[in-house]
Image (tube, helix red, strand yellow):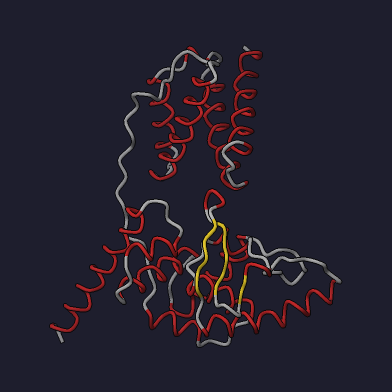
Length: 295
């Protein structure tokens, strides 16, 4: 049994290596796959399943039921099943196993929630506060460029071109895109650069990292989440970096931007993901309409 269980972990390690080297997945994505698959192996161990051939569709369904009972969100369950599908498909291709128990598994149905967005007035209200230079630069870049938090924390000095008014960022799958930035964002960036120069001198740093925390280290995703959460208090809303990105997309569409242009700016590989924001815009349009006729 122990030897067979070792095979689980050996095949997991080989698959993760394949994802990282051959597929070029980002480190965060690689870690997510590892967590998802380690969780499934833990379920197998707990249920004394030590042989790949003993894993059936019923086994996977039991795993799904357990996750539901433990209160996992539908999106989390869907992601974990997608990780399992990928792993089993790879093991079949490598002739490590003879059958794929996920092959006929039905995809869990997800209700697509409309993304939460800030209004233009709420954005303006947050930016009108007495913010620190780094808080303002972070908020401006999330809103003016629609960056993901992972893209934001990965920015380097060479990614910011203030002369030509654009930010170069690398999204999912290390896909590169250029996003234009406006005058207000440039002002916020220039203001932050003065603080950054002070930190660099203070710690005698030689780094190309753009956003530095007070201790001279690259700012973390969690620090950005905390900054945005605190900024949301100015408008009495719980917001995340993704809320600001959603707002960027929605406001562009509300002002007549082409869907394909917004897709490029957001770095979406599939336009159907971007289309979700058109539903937000229509919902907002109805709200404005009924507010007017009810006055």
